[in-house]
Length: 255
Image (tube, rainbow, N blue to C red; front, top):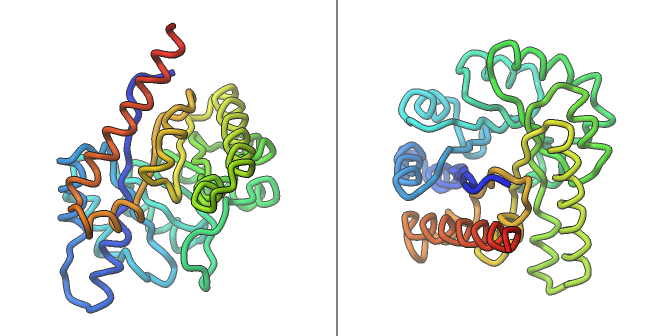
């Protein structure tokens, strides 16, 4: 179990606020720099087909102007492959995308789409771009992710977080067990394990305590919390909760 747990901050919804009125304010690149100063180890940005938040210009500027790894989230489409190969971010996280959805609603069905995903993953790998697949905590999807050549999986934490919000303790416990099983299986076959989507101050400790998880990607909650406490404060608090939970897990294992 690694002692240090990385934090990736997703800045999509800084761009959402900017786009609501047009112009350049608030600037996602400024938010990215602030996030790094507050303790983020990387920046995530989702370039959607409809460009509802992050824009092509944002990707150009983020690639050029930040000093930490950029994780480009995108759908596995020819257009997005061309963009990724042109800008060469540190990593590409492939996610499912539907035009009508408000946010990503589930993981990729890698088991069913392996034939389509394999050449996409191969071209990114050949360009030296680390490939992550956003999947539900399902052992079939973990195995399929390994087969198509991904280096990383990101577990979709949303169902667990929603169960916590709803106060459904049985559902939350069942979802968390699936994450533990998927993370163990992924690490066992050589995949790096991340988790993200829906994580808040109330749920981060559970994911920080999963031994195989090495990175959490958090965005919407942090940007929302920044309205009340400031982005710097929100990220520092999240970083502290992650570090505390990881230290407690390591202490429990050593006892």
